[in-house]
Length: 582
Image 1 (cartoon, rainbow, N blue to C red):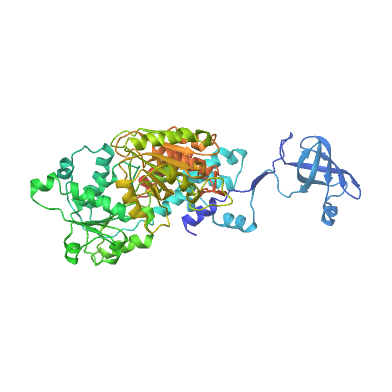
Image 2 (cartoon, rainbow, N blue to C red):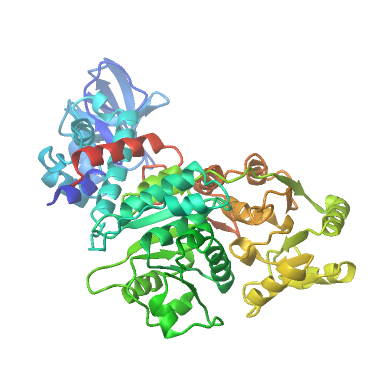
C-alpha cells in the first residue's frame, strides 16, 4: 500500500472510542466495571440484574430491555465478569460483557475499515507527514491513554493531513512541457503609457516576464477585481511575448481589447521606434486575411480563433477563462503550438477568490492577484424595497438628465408562478412608457451584443438579466438596480455593481428586495473589495445559505474548512515547499 493510500485510510476518524479502564469512580459516560452478579429478576418486558461493581464499590441494578438466550448463558447469579455500560438514573442501561480491560479501543463504522487500519497503518507508511501529525493520527487509531484521543489535537491533525493530501495530489498533476524562452523587457511599453500602473499590475507583469524567460511552459492564472486593469497586463504580456493571441468570450469584449491594443501598443513607443505592432481582430464579423493571421504580432478574437489556421505563437491569453471549456482552451493551445513546443499560457479572470482558494489553486497552476485599483471607486450601495420606489425614479431621472446611464437587472426574462418579483416581460412596459432610450436584452437574445453596443452609444436605460455581469464597458453607466438581490451570490452582486463608475465617476447600486434585513445584503454594503466579498461569499455558502431553494455549498473537505483554516493551509504549503518540492 502506498503512503498516500495509507494516509487516505488514516483520515477515517473512528466513530467513537471505548475506554475499558477500571476506574475507581463514576464517569459521565459509558465505562467498564468488574461486576459480581448478586440477583436476577425477570418480567415480561425487562430483565433486571443486581450487580456489585467492585471497582467503584457500589451495588447497582442493571436494566435489560432486550435479554436474549446468549445473555442467559453469560449472566448467571454468583458469576464475576467484566461489563461495560452507561449509568442513567442510578442504574446501568443494557450493559454488555467485555473480554478485554484497561485499554482504549477505536470503534469504526465497519469491520472492513477496522481491518484495513490494523493491517496497513504504521509510522513507516506515514513518514511523508511531519512526525507530530503522524503520531497524532496513529494514536487516534491505537490510543493507550485518554490524552491520545484529545479532540482538539485530533481535529488539527485531520485538517492538516486532509489539505496536505489534496495539495500533494494537485502538485503531482502539474505537467511540464517545453516552450520557447522569451527574454524581453516590458519597461519601454510601460513608460510609453499615458498613466501609471499600480504596484500590483507591475508585480504581475514581472511574474509573467519571469515565466516567459523559461524554457518550460508557463501556466498562470491572473485574477483581478472589476476595473483592476487586467487588459493593460495582457497588452504588456503581448509586448513581451512578441507573437501572441488573446481569446475573449464575446465579440464586444474582443472589440474592446482590440481598441485598447491598437491605441496603446501603437502609441508613443511605436512612434519613437518606427515599428508598427500589428494587431488583428478575429471575430465572426471582422475582416482579416490569411496574411493578417500569419503576420500578426497580436491576434485578438473570440471562439472564431479556433476555426482559423493560426500561426505558431509564443504566448496565449484567455480572458474570463471560466467562460470557456477545457477543450476550447486546449484547442487554442494546440492550434498555436509548434510540434511539442507549446506557447506560454495565461488565463485571466475578473472573479476574485478567497485567499485559501488562491493558495490551493497555486498547487496546480501559478496564481497572481491584482487587488489594487487604478483609482478609488466611489459607489454608494443601498438596500431598497417598494416603499423606496418613488425616490428611485427621482434618482434615475436625475442621472439621465446628467447624460448618465442606468441598468435595471431583473432575475427572470418571463413571468413565473413561483416568483415574487417581476420579470423583464412584466416590468418593461413601465420603463418604456415613462422613459426614452430604453433598451432590452437578456442571455438568450441572439442580438444582445448589437443591442449592448447601440445602448452604449445612444441609450438611457438598459433592461437586462445578469448577462451584463461580464461584458461591455459602459463609460456613462452610473446606476445599477438589481431586482431580487438576495437571490444572487455576493460575488455576482459585486460583479454587477462593478459595472458602474468604471471611469472614476460617482456610482450608485440599488439592491431591490422584499427583505431589507437580509444579512448577506447588509454585509455587501460594508466593502467594495472584491476579495473580501469573495471571503464573505464563501462564509455564507459554507453556512448553507439558501439560493433558489438549494444549498449552494462548495464543500469539498470532511475536516478542512476554507473559511477558518487559512493558517493550517499556509503551514502545509510551507512544509510541502520545504520538504517535498523538486
